[in-house]
Every structure is written in structure tokens, then in C-alpha cells.
Amino acid sequence: MSEQGETTSAPDSAGAGQRCGLVAIVGKPNVGKSTLLNALVGQKISITSRKAQTTRHRITGVRTQGQTQYVFVDTPGFQTKHSSALNRSLNKAVTGVVGDVDVVLFVVEAGNFTLADAKVLALLKAGIPAILVANKLDEVHRRSELAPWLRDMQERHPFAEFMPMSAKNGKDIERLLEVCSRYLPEQPWWYGEDELTDRSERFLAGEMIREKLFRLTGEELPYTSTVIIDKFEEEPSPKFGRMVRIAATIVVERDSHKSMIIGEGGEKLKRIGTEARQELERLMEAKVFLQTFVKVRTGWADDEARVRSFGYE
Ligand SMILES: Nc1nc2c(ncn2[C@@H]2O[C@H](COP(=O)(O)OP(=O)(O)OP(=O)(O)O)[C@@H](O)[C@H]2O)c(=O)[nH]1
Image (cartoon, rainbow, N blue to C red; front, side, top):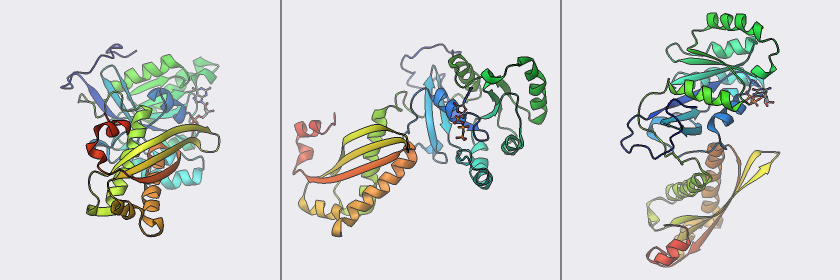
């Protein structure tokens, strides 16, 4: 339950009373960071368009609840299960991230603190509030033992809050969101309330191809060329976790534009597809299969009915 209540009415257009900020989740492998992130975001993680405030970060999810928008950022160093790789990437990737957010969730297993936890803790920056998430509370059978452990943790770092909890418990997640919101600055939201739907990923896929298209063909290509997403299907994949099949059509007005996009031996279209796919994979954290086609539709931009049939309003 958020302090602001569960009002999901449209936000004040001026952004009055809104809070918005960056939240990093850190911790050694297997403490439950992914479980926590998924629960906090409350839906499948997706991407958003990039905004100036967050270009330095890779956004893994956004939750908008009540008046607060929580923007979760990725800490790549902690994704790995290999401690050597963990060590290597720690200083580079994570230090930058945890030094530049509004609040850090430092996740450990309740009642535990190992050398690996200490290494992560050492990276937290003074001045950035850190919440100790003592996760997997449900696995602690003797709760009485937790008090001395918490005191011990208090001595290790000046944590702003202590949250003994379970990432699998909905009430705990609500409580954590509420606590977290206190550390996010009052400022207008960066993202629309509904920006994280499947549709926004679909939209982003189109934008990404469009961006590559214009970047790789240069000025020559008329602005009327556009990208239609014909298919955007997510499939469960034990191998990749997330897998998305995308089929896109680049619509141009002239044959000459078509050959410009396809390039010699199909080289350019291939490059557009590869670059778009790679970036989408990174953003969506998914395996992406992308098919791109080019079609000529003379005067299509003037033909309103046809424009509508392409999915534009
Ligand atoms: N009992 C219990 N298990 C949990 C809880 N949170 C996470 N887990 C389990 O802990 C294991 C690790 O969870 P992940 O979310 O993958 O942990 P992680 O920190 O993201 O792990 P890495 O990807 O290795 O960094 C999984 O089997 C989860 O189901 C919890 O609150 N209680």
C-alpha cells in the first residue's frame, strides 16, 4: 500500500506531487535480485524510450504506482553467476551505477553475510541512501536470531532502512515500494504511466529499425519511408528466457528507394536488421528474431485509408 493510496487516476498534467527516481538493486548472485525486480515492477520487464535523465543507465523496468514512478536500473556486474567475472566487472559497471541513483537496494539473504556480500557492500557510495533488503525471510526459522544479525549489519554500513522480507511476498513488496518512494525526489514522471506495455516494445521495435534505416542510408532517404511492425510475438524459451519474434516491413515510395535500402547484394538491409536486432536484444533482454522486408507503396503517405491499415491512427 502506498502512502498516496491506490489512486490510479490520471496524473496532474503539471506533475504536481509526483515523485520519480532511479533505484538500483545490488547483491551477490542468487540472493533474489531478479525475483525482487520482477515483483517490484509487477509485470514483465520491458524497455522504455530513452530520456535525457537516464541515458547513462540501462533501464530494466519502471513501476508507476500512486504518485510515484520507480525507475529500476541495471547493474550488469551482478547478473553473472561466475565470481571471477563478477569481480572483474564490479568496479567498472556497478560503481558507476550505484553512485548515480536515488536509492540502492542492497540485497542479502536474511541472517547471512559472506565475503561476497562484503565485496558488494564495499561499492556502495556514501551519500546515497541504501536500504538493506534482508531477503528470503521465509527461510529463516528462528526469527529471534535476526535481531543480533541486524545490529551487526547496522555496524557494517549506515543503512537508511532495514527490510527483513521475502521477494515472494506481495505485502512485503508493497511495503518496500512505499519505503523506497520516500527516497525518490519530487519531480514529474519521466515515462508515461502505461509506457511499459507490450505495445511500447512493439513501438520501440519500429523506432529502432527506423533509426537504423535513416542512420545507415543517410540523408538520401525521404522521410516518408516508414516501418510497420507486422508481427511482434513473445514465445517462452527455456534456452533464452525471453524470446521475441518480430517481422517488420519498411515501406518506401519508389523502387529507387527500395534498392537504396536493400543495398548491393542485400548488404545494407542486412546491416539495418542486424544492428536493430542487437540493440533490441540488449534493451529487451531477450533473444530477438527479426525479419525485415521492403515494400514499395507509391503515394502511401497520402492515402489515409492505407495509412490506417498500416496501424497508424
Ligand atoms: N525462499 C525464497 N526464495 C527466494 C526468495 N527470493 C528469491 N528466491 C529464490 O532464490 C533463487 C535466486 O533468485 P534470483 O532472483 O535468481 O537471484 P539473483 O540474485 O537474481 O541471482 P543472480 O542472477 O545469480 O545474480 C531463486 O531460486 C528464487 O526463487 C524469497 O524471498 N524466498
